[in-house]
Image (cartoon, rainbow, N blue to C red; front, side, top):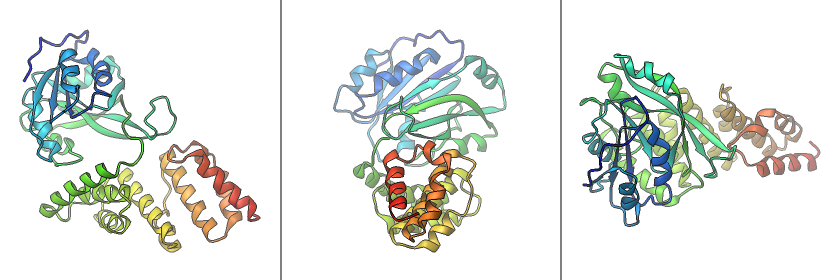
Length: 333
């Protein structure tokens, strides 16, 4: 472990930062720089880097700790939590940057004795470029109170929100935003690793809808569509355990899988909702248009393709829309 001097900050907020790293020399300096104005302390937990990541972290004044990787992200994060001294903890992944924050907004939230966590917006850039307009967004609890009972759970897609609520605190929303750059493209090796870890957890919790959902998404990313469909259907059957966002994403993935097998009835079933999120709604409309076109209902498909949400949908590449529009036009739609 390398112990640095107290982290310099211009902020009056008592916040420490925590990042788990392994071979992140491409991104880590930017992540640290983006957090630095808010922090009084920065803890980096390295799980086995073979590149220059530890040297970069030390050079930027971080407290560097080493942890032997155990196929358990929660264990690594909880190890880092033991080194935190600040009242509040902000966590980032190495390929993320803190894009925006307002200290005047954070102050009252951090002073609320009933608040244990703060959710932030996370923008996943589909092509890895923070200047791109192709991204997906969701909310996640990344800023939370230092408390011995607040610890991460889950070997993968580790969560902190349940522990915060179980400890008696509530979670507040904020306008903080984190940009995630390492999202571009499918990584088969990463998808396979994630699926293996989730299957291990499911052995102990076979009906956990959250695990089933994430396993289904990992299998979908790895193009293992049959088990993906099975696990996503099980997750959706859990009732209200999943968030509305998760339910809609699971339904959209099931519709994509059904399209690949020409199961039009299943597609129609899975897209029989209207999303309040413009990105998901745009993608839903696109899948509906594809389903209609594959049934040679080109005029109906072409009308759907005129909806403005499709042009604004970051889930789609422009060429996908162009190709489908041309197909419908050529077939007399």
